[in-house]
Length: 227
Image 1 (spheres, helix red, strand yellow):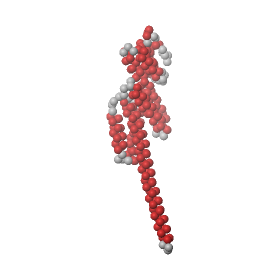
Image 2 (cartoon, rainbow, N blue to C red):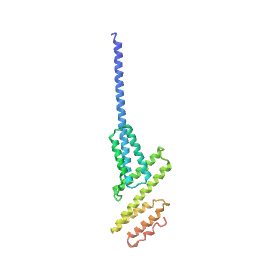
Image 3 (cartoon, rainbow, N blue to C red):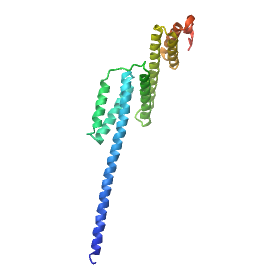
Image 4 (tube, rainbow, N blue to C red):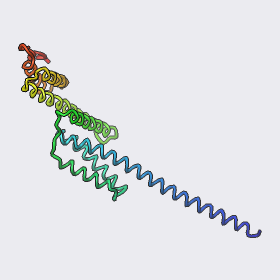
Protein backbone atom coordinates (compact mmCIF):
# COMPACT_ATOMS: atom_id res chain seq x y z
CA UNK A 1 0.00 0.00 0.00
CA UNK A 2 3.06 2.21 0.13
CA UNK A 3 2.58 2.83 -3.64
CA UNK A 4 -0.97 4.06 -3.13
CA UNK A 5 -0.10 7.80 -3.13
CA UNK A 6 1.82 7.37 -6.36
CA UNK A 7 -1.09 5.47 -7.89
CA UNK A 8 -3.47 8.27 -6.91
CA UNK A 9 -1.17 10.84 -8.49
CA UNK A 10 -0.97 8.81 -11.69
CA UNK A 11 -4.74 8.38 -11.84
CA UNK A 12 -5.30 12.10 -11.24
CA UNK A 13 -2.76 12.93 -13.93
CA UNK A 14 -4.46 10.57 -16.39
CA UNK A 15 -7.81 12.11 -15.53
CA UNK A 16 -6.48 15.63 -16.06
CA UNK A 17 -4.93 14.67 -19.38
CA UNK A 18 -8.21 13.11 -20.48
CA UNK A 19 -10.15 16.18 -19.44
CA UNK A 20 -7.68 18.46 -21.23
CA UNK A 21 -7.88 16.31 -24.36
CA UNK A 22 -11.68 16.38 -24.27
CA UNK A 23 -11.63 20.14 -23.77
CA UNK A 24 -9.27 20.67 -26.70
CA UNK A 25 -11.43 18.45 -28.92
CA UNK A 26 -14.53 20.33 -27.79
CA UNK A 27 -12.91 23.70 -28.50
CA UNK A 28 -11.75 22.51 -31.92
CA UNK A 29 -15.24 21.27 -32.76
CA UNK A 30 -16.76 24.52 -31.46
CA UNK A 31 -14.41 26.63 -33.62
CA UNK A 32 -15.17 24.46 -36.63
CA UNK A 33 -18.90 24.87 -36.02
CA UNK A 34 -18.52 28.64 -35.60
CA UNK A 35 -16.54 28.84 -38.85
CA UNK A 36 -19.18 26.77 -40.65
CA UNK A 37 -21.99 28.97 -39.33
CA UNK A 38 -20.07 32.13 -40.23
CA UNK A 39 -19.39 30.83 -43.75
CA UNK A 40 -23.07 29.98 -44.16
CA UNK A 41 -24.08 33.46 -42.98
CA UNK A 42 -21.58 35.15 -45.31
CA UNK A 43 -22.70 33.00 -48.23
CA UNK A 44 -26.36 33.87 -47.67
CA UNK A 45 -25.51 37.58 -47.37
CA UNK A 46 -23.40 37.47 -50.53
CA UNK A 47 -26.12 35.65 -52.46
CA UNK A 48 -28.73 38.24 -51.43
CA UNK A 49 -26.50 41.12 -52.47
CA UNK A 50 -25.58 39.43 -55.76
CA UNK A 51 -29.24 38.69 -56.51
CA UNK A 52 -30.18 42.33 -55.95
CA UNK A 53 -27.14 43.57 -57.88
CA UNK A 54 -28.03 41.38 -60.87
CA UNK A 55 -31.50 42.91 -61.05
CA UNK A 56 -30.21 46.47 -60.56
CA UNK A 57 -27.78 45.97 -63.43
CA UNK A 58 -30.57 44.72 -65.67
CA UNK A 59 -32.77 47.74 -65.00
CA UNK A 60 -29.87 50.20 -65.35
CA UNK A 61 -30.19 51.42 -61.78
CA UNK A 62 -28.24 54.56 -60.81
CA UNK A 63 -24.55 53.73 -60.66
CA UNK A 64 -23.88 54.79 -57.02
CA UNK A 65 -26.29 52.13 -55.74
CA UNK A 66 -24.69 49.42 -57.84
CA UNK A 67 -21.21 50.48 -56.76
CA UNK A 68 -22.26 50.34 -53.09
CA UNK A 69 -23.55 46.77 -53.44
CA UNK A 70 -20.53 45.74 -55.50
CA UNK A 71 -18.25 46.96 -52.71
CA UNK A 72 -20.24 44.83 -50.28
CA UNK A 73 -19.78 41.76 -52.49
CA UNK A 74 -16.01 42.33 -52.50
CA UNK A 75 -15.99 42.72 -48.70
CA UNK A 76 -17.97 39.51 -48.18
CA UNK A 77 -15.77 37.52 -50.57
CA UNK A 78 -12.67 38.73 -48.71
CA UNK A 79 -14.15 37.55 -45.40
CA UNK A 80 -14.98 34.14 -46.88
CA UNK A 81 -11.47 33.89 -48.29
CA UNK A 82 -9.90 34.60 -44.89
CA UNK A 83 -12.02 31.96 -43.15
CA UNK A 84 -11.68 29.24 -45.76
CA UNK A 85 -9.66 30.15 -48.88
CA UNK A 86 -10.32 26.77 -50.51
CA UNK A 87 -14.10 26.96 -50.06
CA UNK A 88 -15.96 25.83 -53.17
CA UNK A 89 -18.60 28.45 -52.47
CA UNK A 90 -15.93 31.14 -52.84
CA UNK A 91 -15.25 30.23 -56.46
CA UNK A 92 -18.97 29.87 -57.11
CA UNK A 93 -19.70 33.32 -55.71
CA UNK A 94 -16.78 34.86 -57.59
CA UNK A 95 -18.03 33.29 -60.81
CA UNK A 96 -21.54 34.57 -60.11
CA UNK A 97 -20.15 38.05 -59.41
CA UNK A 98 -18.13 38.06 -62.65
CA UNK A 99 -21.22 36.97 -64.59
CA UNK A 100 -23.28 39.80 -63.11
CA UNK A 101 -20.62 42.41 -63.91
CA UNK A 102 -20.48 41.26 -67.52
CA UNK A 103 -24.24 40.82 -67.95
CA UNK A 104 -25.78 43.37 -70.32
CA UNK A 105 -29.26 41.87 -70.33
CA UNK A 106 -32.39 43.71 -69.29
CA UNK A 107 -35.62 42.84 -67.54
CA UNK A 108 -38.93 43.00 -69.34
CA UNK A 109 -40.69 45.27 -66.88
CA UNK A 110 -44.06 44.66 -68.50
CA UNK A 111 -43.85 41.25 -66.88
CA UNK A 112 -45.40 41.34 -63.39
CA UNK A 113 -42.79 38.98 -61.91
CA UNK A 114 -39.94 41.06 -63.33
CA UNK A 115 -41.52 44.24 -62.00
CA UNK A 116 -41.72 42.71 -58.51
CA UNK A 117 -38.05 41.72 -58.78
CA UNK A 118 -37.13 45.28 -59.72
CA UNK A 119 -39.06 46.77 -56.78
CA UNK A 120 -37.56 44.22 -54.37
CA UNK A 121 -34.01 44.95 -55.54
CA UNK A 122 -34.50 48.72 -55.20
CA UNK A 123 -35.96 48.34 -51.70
CA UNK A 124 -33.03 46.07 -50.79
CA UNK A 125 -30.58 48.75 -51.94
CA UNK A 126 -32.40 51.41 -49.88
CA UNK A 127 -32.35 49.20 -46.76
CA UNK A 128 -28.68 48.45 -47.32
CA UNK A 129 -27.86 52.16 -47.62
CA UNK A 130 -29.67 52.78 -44.31
CA UNK A 131 -27.75 49.91 -42.71
CA UNK A 132 -24.43 51.38 -43.88
CA UNK A 133 -25.46 54.69 -42.34
CA UNK A 134 -26.34 52.98 -39.04
CA UNK A 135 -22.81 51.56 -38.73
CA UNK A 136 -21.16 54.81 -39.77
CA UNK A 137 -19.98 53.56 -43.17
CA UNK A 138 -22.20 56.07 -45.01
CA UNK A 139 -22.99 59.64 -44.02
CA UNK A 140 -26.58 60.74 -43.48
CA UNK A 141 -26.30 63.07 -46.46
CA UNK A 142 -24.99 60.31 -48.73
CA UNK A 143 -27.67 57.92 -47.54
CA UNK A 144 -30.49 60.43 -48.03
CA UNK A 145 -29.27 61.35 -51.51
CA UNK A 146 -28.92 57.71 -52.56
CA UNK A 147 -32.27 56.67 -51.05
CA UNK A 148 -34.02 59.61 -52.72
CA UNK A 149 -32.46 58.79 -56.07
CA UNK A 150 -33.52 55.15 -55.76
CA UNK A 151 -37.07 56.12 -54.79
CA UNK A 152 -37.36 58.45 -57.81
CA UNK A 153 -35.96 55.69 -60.00
CA UNK A 154 -38.57 53.28 -58.63
CA UNK A 155 -41.37 55.73 -59.47
CA UNK A 156 -39.90 56.31 -62.94
CA UNK A 157 -39.96 52.57 -63.66
CA UNK A 158 -43.65 52.42 -62.78
CA UNK A 159 -44.42 55.52 -64.85
CA UNK A 160 -42.53 54.36 -67.95
CA UNK A 161 -43.92 50.83 -67.74
CA UNK A 162 -47.57 51.86 -67.39
CA UNK A 163 -47.26 54.52 -70.10
CA UNK A 164 -45.67 52.00 -72.46
CA UNK A 165 -48.30 49.34 -71.82
CA UNK A 166 -51.11 51.91 -72.08
CA UNK A 167 -49.89 53.24 -75.43
CA UNK A 168 -49.71 49.75 -76.91
CA UNK A 169 -53.18 48.92 -75.62
CA UNK A 170 -54.50 52.17 -77.09
CA UNK A 171 -52.99 51.28 -80.46
CA UNK A 172 -54.63 47.85 -80.16
CA UNK A 173 -58.03 49.52 -79.72
CA UNK A 174 -58.32 48.67 -76.02
CA UNK A 175 -58.93 52.15 -74.59
CA UNK A 176 -60.56 51.06 -71.31
CA UNK A 177 -57.62 48.91 -70.21
CA UNK A 178 -55.20 51.53 -71.55
CA UNK A 179 -56.86 54.18 -69.39
CA UNK A 180 -56.32 52.02 -66.30
CA UNK A 181 -52.59 51.96 -66.99
CA UNK A 182 -52.49 55.69 -67.74
CA UNK A 183 -54.19 56.40 -64.41
CA UNK A 184 -51.71 54.15 -62.60
CA UNK A 185 -48.88 56.06 -64.26
CA UNK A 186 -50.52 59.31 -63.18
CA UNK A 187 -50.67 58.21 -59.55
CA UNK A 188 -46.90 57.73 -59.55
CA UNK A 189 -46.29 60.99 -61.40
CA UNK A 190 -48.20 62.79 -58.63
CA UNK A 191 -45.71 61.39 -56.11
CA UNK A 192 -42.80 63.14 -57.79
CA UNK A 193 -41.57 66.25 -56.03
CA UNK A 194 -43.18 69.46 -57.25
CA UNK A 195 -39.75 70.82 -58.13
CA UNK A 196 -39.06 67.88 -60.42
CA UNK A 197 -38.85 69.47 -63.92
CA UNK A 198 -40.45 66.39 -65.52
CA UNK A 199 -43.52 66.37 -63.30
CA UNK A 200 -45.65 68.93 -65.17
CA UNK A 201 -44.58 67.60 -68.56
CA UNK A 202 -45.47 64.03 -67.58
CA UNK A 203 -48.83 65.11 -66.16
CA UNK A 204 -49.68 66.90 -69.40
CA UNK A 205 -48.59 63.86 -71.41
CA UNK A 206 -50.63 61.37 -69.38
CA UNK A 207 -53.71 63.64 -69.41
CA UNK A 208 -53.47 63.84 -73.20
CA UNK A 209 -53.30 60.05 -73.37
CA UNK A 210 -56.29 59.66 -71.05
CA UNK A 211 -58.21 62.13 -73.21
CA UNK A 212 -57.44 60.04 -76.29
CA UNK A 213 -58.50 56.84 -74.58
CA UNK A 214 -61.75 58.07 -73.04
CA UNK A 215 -64.87 58.36 -75.22
CA UNK A 216 -66.69 61.55 -76.20
CA UNK A 217 -63.52 63.63 -76.25
CA UNK A 218 -63.30 63.97 -72.45
CA UNK A 219 -61.11 66.88 -71.58
CA UNK A 220 -58.88 64.95 -69.20
CA UNK A 221 -55.93 66.95 -70.45
CA UNK A 222 -57.17 69.81 -68.32
CA UNK A 223 -57.05 67.82 -65.12
CA UNK A 224 -54.38 68.64 -62.54
CA UNK A 225 -53.15 71.48 -64.75
CA UNK A 226 -52.16 73.43 -61.67
CA UNK A 227 -50.52 70.52 -59.85
